Image (cartoon, rainbow, N blue to C red; front, side):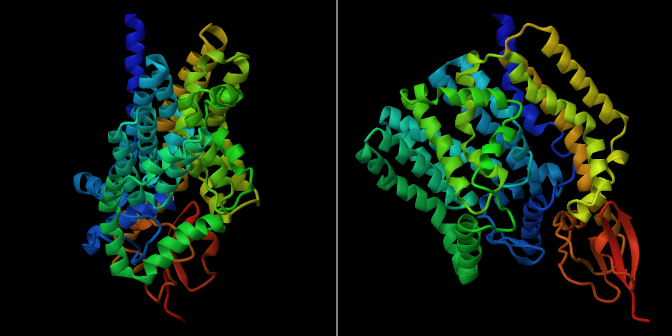
Amino acid sequence: MQRKQALDLLALLLPLLSFFLCLGAFPLFDVDEGAFSEATREMFERGDFLSTYLNGEHRFDKPILVYWLQAIGFLIFGANEWAFRLPSAVAAAVWSYATWQFARERFGADTAIAALTVAATALGPFAIGRAATADALLNMLLALALFDAWRHLESGQRAPLLRSYVWIGLGVLTKGPIALIVPGAVSFLYCASRLEWRRWLRSVFDPIGWIILAALVVPWYTAALAIHGQKFIDGFILKHNVERFTGTLEGHAGSLFYYIFAVPLLMLPWTSPLLASLRQIRSDAATGVRRFLWIWAGFVVVFFSISGTKLPHYVLYGSTPLFLMLACHRDLLRRKWLHLAPPTLLLACFVVLPFIFHQLSLGDAGNAYYRAQLGEALGEAGWPYYAVTIAALAGWLLIALRTTLPAWKQLSIAAVLQVVVLTTTVVPWVGAVLQGPIKLAAAEARKYDATVVVWRLDAPSFSVYRQAVTPSREPAVGEIALTRVDRIPDSGYDVLFRKGGVALIRRLPPT
């Protein structure tokens, strides 16, 4: 009993390991992390905490809440990776513990620990929980809203319903209408499946709930509309919401089956148990809470599958119920080798990833800029990288082949190994390869007393590390530009710095 309690306590510490270990040990990734972080930094530079700008231009991609939270980290820790990522790490940890609490109330303590383990270690939540973006915050708020929506449907009590309005309102301040759409649609589909139309209408049109929602949402949206007028409508409402759903925004296209392939990858190393759980949907539909959870997951997959713009993290809005369903069906796993194959392949992939990157850099396929960046892969992967990844793979193979633990426990060990290797070794290495040259270029640019611009490259993290707004345009004579190495003009420029795919160049006077 004491051993089990100790293991449960260690499992409860997993979110802290997954989302805080080495959180600031790698550069900000462009474009998203760089854009969010620079927009937050510019709030202080401009003294404007109601509007967001990116390199001096309007940024209407997301509402204000995540920037305010990043601003708190900025005030406490300064302009560094830890500060900008802190809100996401906190949100992801709360998301995991909220999942644990919901499961403990309905499925028991053991299932709750299992659900927490999945939530804290699956690849998709791990990625957004360590990224300086709005996605972990929105996922936390959606989970809290739908958990409380179920508590209301389950008990008829009004308090959880009103709390759900709070979470939805904060979600609308985080990422816009999607925070209304997902809880509204999921609760509607569940009530419709039970022919409980009036119950849904009473919940959705609760007058106190709407007062709470309006009090949270209306002030900032009104201020943004008053300050920016039609630009806010065109930029936020039409472009980043309507066009994002009805068309392909920023080249993020995909087929109708995009998320059928994305979900299994985002759930690594829990891919095989996920597929096994799908066989239980019909029997789960007879139980109220399980039906609600499967409807939640199914709606998100269908909704974003018909959306014109597709990004992998969108489907994570429906991942929370998958954590719970995987945990509920953990004792039904058969064919152990099938369930252990995905983590084995992933851990093996970590070992050879530098060689894969190197080979990609030698070819002609893809973007010339990224090929040049990947050319740094072998140089950045020193002996500690191989020592950690090979040791993790060897240790995992020993556990998988030589122990008689149940499949679920072995997968839990694999998940912890995955987190440790990613946080301490793989992600910092990938950051050094893909973003290290930009961070170094920013440090180099700060040495010069000249105007600096970005030319033919989208790298907002450069401005974060320069701690200055960097316009995007062609440099004038005497100005310095950050650009791609494959876009340096043949003449008229002096190369000041070059590494990977980026270069700092200065425009020379005409001769």
